[in-house]
Length: 250
Ligand SMILES: [Zn+2]
Image (tube, rainbow, N blue to C red):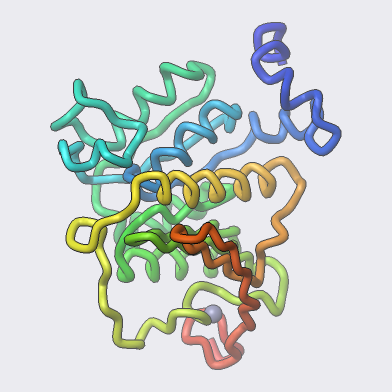
């Protein structure tokens, strides 16, 4: 770290839990963020400001006026731009040290297989089950920790799926791939603006802890967040031995 970096990250370096080693680990790490919307915005801003050395942002969508209520990495001047490019501009305005790679094609299985293999941690900031399952498959295949967040209306969920340790569940253990799903999209259901901020910020928290060596205590649990009465309820998630992604027979 040079003098400017020692100054920029001084409030991290002061932390007993993080220190200079933890900050150096962040600077040497690579985070893959899929989705640069409501969850991806605070994730991108906090990983960038905290000095994650390389951030890959995946999003094929463009900034729309209806996004600005909650997608805080974007602004009025960037309506119509690709979200990944807009979020990169937001990170670079805070911390030009961070290398940001943007991928502006749809996150399909082949793309995810390539990108997940290169990352140290993966953050699922998407809003549909098909992409969530594709991300999970790639994370299980490459044994990468997956920080998963979701928010709709006034409710949110947070979990870390880390199959590097045997016995931990994957996303498909909890939400089987063949289960009938009813897609709940913010576009049609609505979402309370700061709720995606809360969940996204918690995702960034757990990713930074994983990358700096602190580890995540939410592995094997799902934190259910009720925005109406601000209740945070952890639920234990067992591994499903019959899981079609991580189970014994697969
Ligand atoms: Zn599984």
